[in-house]
Image 1 (tube, rainbow, N blue to C red):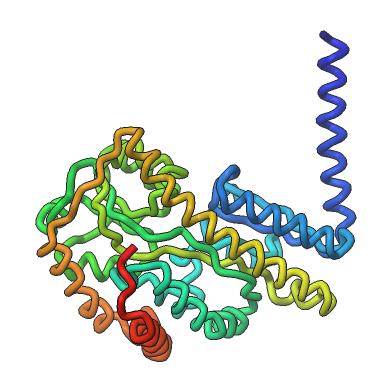
Image 2 (image 1 turned 180 degrees about the vertical axis):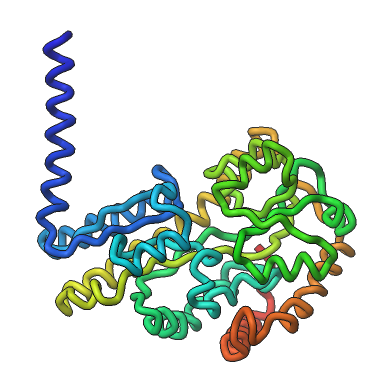
Length: 342
């Protein structure tokens, strides 16, 4: 048994040494951080992307990922990129939007009803997003997705009145969601994402917003066991690399990175949507109750959509990006008048 234990330890050490050797051998090693935990679809697909890039560049381009927020939140990650400690990251929209405000445009509450709408608008906005991030010294590689966001609470919420009586959480640095809630008479408690679960456990907040899969990943569903079954909004993110470091790659290497990202992050979006769909039944099996929202209350909340836009246009995002977004959305509706809500 002692010999077997020593052999196993030797194998593990050799394995780690091999990984370190491969990473050290990469001529261009990108250190990447993200809040996404190990074992999630986001990390799994990113590793497939990284493996493909390494293989196609003969090991000259490599990625070392720091998952689960061990490098800090989005703003900490961005600061580390600025000083060269990191070379990129998988950022949430909320976390990176203070740097590129127009990137938050797709998170306007009640903007989308279907993923087809999302896809049509996202594809149309990509050139603008790439340009905006490029101006800030970042290479836009691919968008990521969290999915449609639902209201989740420790108590049933079926009406706007019940929502107003709850203690709502909003991500720190999300002026759109904060303004929307303030418009309907709610002053949200702003916290970073890592602080949400403990705040639910202590009762500091009782109502949160997340995708179904995200709630499972973050374990929020263990406390917020009631979900109002109408999407509140849409959440997404972006995979960025430092522009200066990316520019040191050869043209062929850059093309490999971007083409591999296009392939794998498209699969990632599909996997995320599948995970959200499967999470519904998982949560039901774990005692979560889905609540049908009152129709008049939903109409009341949607009425605040334009009030929020009018309040923040030119401040939280530019008029240009808003007009382009609505042009794309209206064009989709004109071409697909019969498409139903997700």
